[in-house]
Each structure stands twice: as structure tokens, then as C-alpha cells.
Image (cartoon, rainbow, N blue to C red):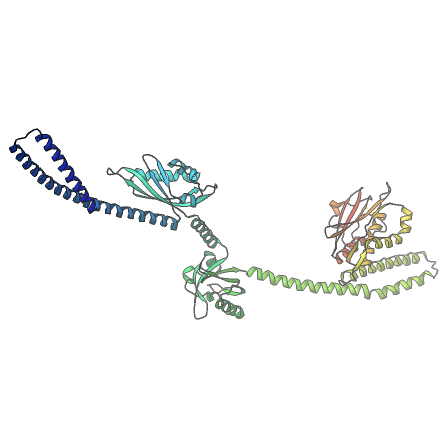
Length: 573
């Protein structure tokens, strides 16, 4: 810089000397008198001196200017460095906070956004608007009016700082909750000219706030007693209570003031299960959740059964911070459980008594009934002349015969009901039906029904062959017994596999059953729906009992005058 100053000064001197020389030549070049030459020489010397003096002054001025320029340049460099550092800090802070920065020139309605509008909300550069209209168009419709009124009121009142929460639309159409903070810049006349703000995504915080508010509502409105304790253990190895909800007060009688700071053991007393209380201590020391049921005590000393559970709660670092406990008054359930147990005991005893009575009826009566039958057979061989006596003996014989049939029916029912471990095997359906068909060949020959048999080569697993024959025999006999007198009997018997089930169907066009009147009675014991002389009301009861003993089910569909369909379903496994 100093060399440049010397060069400029030297050039300045040379130029001035040349100019002075030329000027002197032009002025005195036409004179030849010696005195004039001396004057020219004197003036030339004087000009040179003046030039040198002015050169020194010029050099001084240049030096001062250069010094000033150096100071200005230094300040500009410092200012530029500060601007660069400030911009770097701004960019770093914007990245660290994930804030979206906006700059709004109010008079021109021009807006500039930083890269946060792309990173946080997903907008491409060409999608970002240049004015406030684009900004407001992205605010949720439910928030736009409230937010804009609040913002323009802030500008009108010339308040320096503004903030608001609203929902801002992302590029994909979804919305995020944001916290927007702005700073107003004014001119010397206090007129707002510019506004700079930062939008912060607070969606997670808002969702967490809503979740906590919901949990608070659940806790405060819950009908179950809720208690929160710390983790510091007292002398009983149990933490003290920090919070209880209103349901806790309602169930236990303890107000929050009575419970907070106390041990949960205030709920237990003399009749509480000691083993259950030990379970509380053990699980708390091991930070394990648990549930107990025991007798508890209200504040007034009354007893009640409590279902008491506690679960450990951890913070974000995974450290145990609290215990939360839920208590439920299960006194009514316990009383019902006792009543149920008592009822089960009574039913079991009654069932045993009835079973014993059935055995007595079916076995102890068979001997005297056999004696009566034998005596009647002997009487049949003795001629009786007295008609009244003969009528009495005939009536006695009929009653004895009916009693014998009833005892035999009862024995069949007892065998089925009291024999869960029946012999089960793999049974071929077609083979069983052939046996039944052979047994009923005479009956079928008399009535000559139209038979449609569609039995596949299917086997039923875990079945009893005798029971299956009895089922087929009863259903086929019923179809013949209750045929319509006005049309030829048609019987359709099919079998098919549906999923894992084997389904058997017995369909006829007989006289049918009135389902509206008898739907719940069809499979009842001694239920009769027609005045047929051979009807005893036992066959369908035995069918249902035998089907269920083989883990199957039976359904019936019927219509008077159109016929009946029985559908039997067995699990094929």
C-alpha cells in the first residue's frame, strides 16, 4: 500500500514538472533577451519547488486517505465476518430447533421462508408462495379466522411480540400443530414495516398433551379406585401414597388428605390375608406387577372384598418413577361366588340323589316287576270264569306291561347319561345304514316308501356304532310311523363333508310338527306331538342324548303337512 502511495506521488511530480516545462516553453519560447531567460529560469525553479511542496501535501493526503480506507476496509471485513458468523449461527439454530423462519415485509406483502418450510412441512421451493395469502391458505379452516384476527390486532396495536398456536397444512395434505412466534419491526415513526417469526412443530407435544388430558379424565372419572405411590419405601417396604381419585374416596371412605403420605396398608386389617400382604411386599421389592384379592377395611372400619393390583411405572430413561394401583370393590362378586359354590354343591347333591333314585327305580324295582310278570304269565294258564275278575287281571297285566316298558326306557337313558366313556371307534356310515335297513326291511316292504339314499364312503371318527345304529333306526322308524295318509312317503338320507364337519340329513314328506308350539319340546323326555298309538315320546330324547354323547349336535326343521328334516353334525376329528 505504501509503495502504491510513492508511485502515485512520483507520477504526480513528474507530470507536474512536464506540465510546468511545457508551459514555460510556450510562454517564454518567443523571447531571446538574456534578462528574460533569467526570469524564465527563476520561475522554473520556483514552480519546481511548488510542485515538490504540493507533492508532499498530495502524498500526505493520499496517506490519510489510504489510512481511512484501511480502517473502513477493516470495519467492513469485521462486519462481513460478523454477518457470516451470524448467518451460520442462524442456520445452525434453525437446524437444531427445526424451526421454520419467515420474514414478512408488511407494506409490499412479501414473505421469505427458510429451508424449514421444506424440511418440516415437505414443500418444494417452487410450491412456496411469496405473500401472506399462501401462508393463510395453509392454515386449518377452523383456525384461520381466529389466528388472522389475533395477528392483525397485534400489528394494529404495534405490540412487539406475538405468538399463537394453530394447525398448518403439510405438502401431503395432513396437518401439524405449530407454535408460531413473531417479532414486529417498526420505522422511526413507529409504523410497522416488517415482521419476523419462527414456526415450531409441536404436534408430538400436542398429542402428548391430549393423551395426558385423556388419561387424567379416565383417572378422575373412573369408577375404579386409582392410587399413585412413589418408589421410596417405608418401614413396611411399601411406598407412600401420592395421589388418589374420587372413586378411591367413594369406595374406601378415605379423602385425599387422609390418604396422601400414608401407606396403602391403611386399607388392610385383622381379617386381611397375610399371604396376600406378603405378596405385595415381595413384588414391590422386585418391581413386579401383581394382583391380590383379600378382605379390606374402609375408613369407618366396615369390611369389604378388594381386588388390589399394582404396576410399576418407568420414565423415559427406563427408571422406575412411580407405582400405579387400581382397586375394585368385589364384595358382591364374592358373595355371588359363594352362592354359586353353594348352589353347585346343592345341585351336585341333588344330582347324586336323583341318580341314586334312578338306580333304585331301574334296578330295585326290576326284581318285583319280574315276579309280577311271572305271576301274570301263570295266571294266563288258569281259566277264569268270573268276567269281573278277568277284567281286573287284564287291567293289571296292561299296567304291569306299561310299567316294565317305562323301567326299560329309564334304563336306556341312565346307560347313556351315566356312561361318558363309551366305546368309540371309526365307523363307516354306509355300513351302519345297511344294518338298519336290513332290520327294517319288513316294515319298509309294507309301506313301500320312495327312498333316495346319497351316502358317501364317509367315516365318523370317535363314534359308537351301536349309538349310530340306534339314531338311524329311530329317525327312519319315525319317518315311516308319521307318514302322511294322503300321499306316498318319500325319504331322503344324505351325507356330506362341510369344512371339518360330517353332516347327515334325514328328510321326509310326512305329517310334520307344529314348530311354533313345540319347538322347545321336540327333544324332551316323554313329549308326544301326535296321537299315534305307538308313540311314547322317548325316541327323539334318546337320539339327542346319543348324538351329544358323541360330541355332535342335532337340529330339526318341520312344517305341518309338508314334512320334517333332521340334521346331525359331527366333528370329523
